[in-house]
Image (cartoon, rainbow, N blue to C red; front, side, top):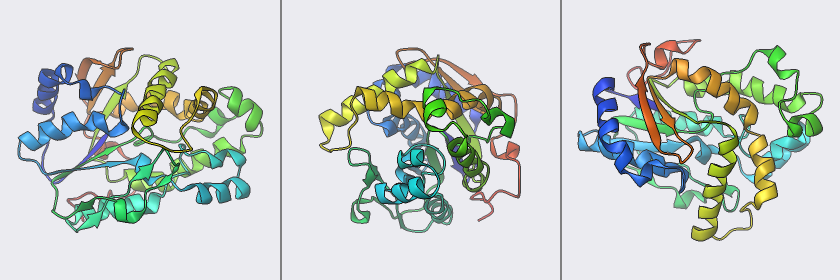
Length: 286
């Protein structure tokens, strides 16, 4: 969960506030809408007079038609949303640039129940300048794997549906190219550490159950479809678990009930200072 800033965030004080409040908020669990986990952070920051906007990388997903075209042109697995290559990265960059400049903008929103973006007229409008943007997402700040790591399939989906590695190679190249341009904005990184990848399915099922209760739509997944869906995320999720904590400013370790059991500060610098590549386009620069 990266943070973009126009001000200096006092990381130890911020972490202390999290420790004081995190265990008291059921919002800080994953059993409801994906963005609910940000509400506590937003609340804590706004209490300090910080103007906050929230954006999820999930809201940048390409629609079904765009992904169908990718599936025909590159690989059939790209029909399923989730992995790098299935987001509108350009839209994300333009949105963050507008927020950095204090411009009025509508914030994209994606309807998971229908597996398509909401119509633009339903996107919320950000009319006032903000001090900070909370940018949330499972693959935000992810880094590409070394090419030899792609040779061996990591699960049944890759072995059966991508035996030649075309899909995972494309995803890795997207992550190493356009997505790093998006991640160049990062200044701070907060990482949620999960106990084990096997719990991702159970937590994701809670989200799907929440969708069934709160939304109607033909694209809500049943259990077999969901199990297959989660396998699309396994490679990058495991890679993130092994690599991202070393680059995090704050690590939030979750137990199997999805509650925060530990909050750790990194002795390293900010996420942005550790990003490789050209000079970052941070709010201070733009």
